[in-house]
Length: 255
Length: 241
Image 1 (tube, rainbow over the protein chains, first blue to last red):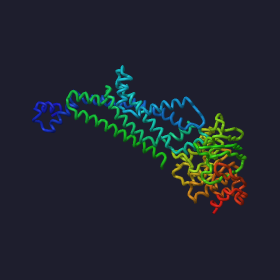
Image 2 (image 1 turned 90 degrees about the vertical axis):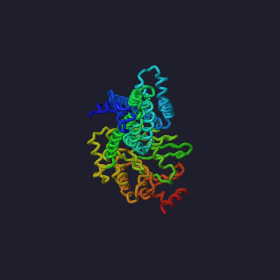
Image 3 (image 1 turned 30 degrees about the vertical axis):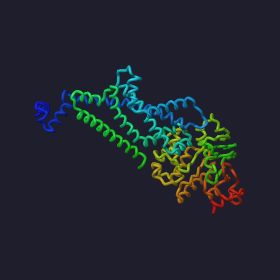
């Protein structure tokens, strides 16, 4: 018997007469197969990935920029004074403080209902908010990586006559990248999972669709478990890719 | 070659160098000794502005390099530096360590830079390690590579910041031998060290530093035979006993 036929047969039986497995099947059928609902999960999944990619791009660009400026300012040649750099550093410091000091959810509510209250593109507003949020954390991760490297490395570069940028590019960044990669991967996973929060401002992603299905079937278990499994698979796949990259980078210098 | 006038340096409230004045002549081998905390490393690091002096001037080949308008990167190319902890770049092979700066700054071609690097590596007996990574080398080998890395930039002065202090005792000799042969070639050298034997053998002049000043300076034979200040006498009694 095919699945749809089985569903027809079982749904004709009064609920009280069904076995545990049979009622499980009915719930799952309604949550996944009925009316082609599984397509909605994948639509949601695609939207989640889209939001993650947009937020990641914003986060990385913003994070690198903020980290560069703040590190350059912290390591400026003593005695020199660059007022523009000082002002930008100060603004970035406030940015990082505010973002790290307030909950993601509150930031979403403010961005969705205050700053961009007239925008109807909730998903994009959500992605933007996530990106701005992620940028603060990424900048701190990168800054930590750059600052934690033995100062002797930069000194050796500078003593050869390389300038600040050359020293950063050839000596500091390649080494710092290796140390920050695990934290950066972790931040990416957090970001991926935080995309689920944009449903509170009406952003469309996998949780949004799952909620819609719950509203129609009056059944919460399967839609949310399916959602959880989707996140889990994405995170596991990403962790696997990350571990491959880390292994490759390690292989390049400790042979 | 390097003229230091009234150099002062402090970290916060802590005054490390109080009014240092000295002149280093071309070809001269100056050995800087003194107890730890006397400011000798800071003095050396001020010479290529790894530490920015608070006052005074450092003139290198007639140019005041403490002037913020002077291009310190250009001057550093002519001042090689060797560090206590080698500071080789761990993510690059020995060859890349040696050729990075010559290729970027002297605009040498890869073949040109590598030929020079191989020649110098051969001279310190490490030609076969060109493809290795720093982590695969012993401390003494790392320091010899670090010296070669500085030499690849064809510097006019070499600054050594306690080059043998982080080495196992049996490896000190191989590094000192390289430094001696460098001295024999006529390189101008400023060496901060605790190796009194090296100071005696190679130095043209010994600077004894204590509490941020040059307390005493003399030719090594003179200094080690009869140090004038009480501090120097006490120091030598401790290190030579």
